[in-house]
Amino acid sequence: MRTLVACGAAAGIAATFNAPIAGAFFATEVILGEFSARNFTPVVISSVAATVVGHAFFGDLPAFVLPAYELRHPMELIAYVVLGILAAVVATSFIHLLHFSEDVFEKSRLVPSVRAAFGGLLVGCIALFFPDVFGLGYAAIESALAGGTTTFILLSLLGVKSLATCITLGSGGSGGIFAPSLFLGAMTGGLVGAAVQLAFPGHVAPPGSYALVGMAAVVAATTHAPMSAIFILFELTNDYQLILPLMTTCVLATLFAGRLNKDSIYTAKLRRRGINIAGGQVVDLLRDDQVREIVSQAATTVLPSADIPTLEQNIMTSATAMNSPSLIRANGKASCVFERSCLVIARRSPSSRLAQTSRANRARSRHRTREGCSEL
Image (cartoon, rainbow, N blue to C red; front, top):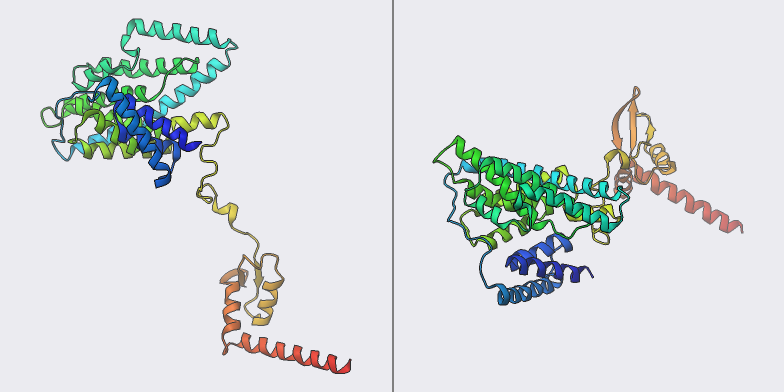
């Protein structure tokens, strides 16, 4: 079932954005959570088939036609690092706002139809002042990529698009988060690009290049799927010039988003419904355990003057003998630790005193056994 869901997700992404590679990697990173030939093969087939069907209806054209952008100076990577951090903050805020909207509408006691109508009314009021919140918002994205959007409009659209999307989804309306993430990323990147251009005019890439990378960064941060974000932006633009800042920003955005929010926007929604998408998979069992929860506080203590047989007897009779070492204390302080494995090594060493004592004890035991048998 998980593989079939992944195939459907890959086909949807591939056909919608004309991005078969990104669709396959999205399904692998987000849905499957693992890479294997057995699972990846049907996902790729579904992605390719959906792309072919999409080409028949929409043609083989990139979603955005852009001027050639490039990394003009290696120091620009610092600005892209800042963009990655801001993208993580935007993505995390978007996820929390979406959950807040869902909780508010669920507590409103409105029937689903009235709830959806009320949400549509609120979004319509927002669209009266900012019509770009309607639909996928490709026109606003293209304007930001071309550098033709003012800073005020970028900042305004960043806020109202987040609010409109959360109201729509929270009220029970139909929609996704992939295209809104691209929208928010373009606005975030455009703001960073405008700030960098203002600080270093003529020495850095235009704001459109930062908007382009910001699209992938916010997608990576919301989905926790950096490879998918990198490939989808590459396929949307057919531009390889920004691959270095693209990789850097997406990875950093995913890293910081994971620190701010453990779950992606998909897994968080499932977890709120009591569904663990990682169930049945091999996970790191010790990842969430603390050392103080595992380490044993009980330990056998002996004096430094104790002989080896006494030490052996104390360890063997201790309740924690199999797992805990013995502390050899001198003047009330632990002076050294004697592991149980040391006894095993000592027994196996022919020259050790413990081994000689053990052989003597076994000899006396056999002698008593023979005496008991002769008396019978």
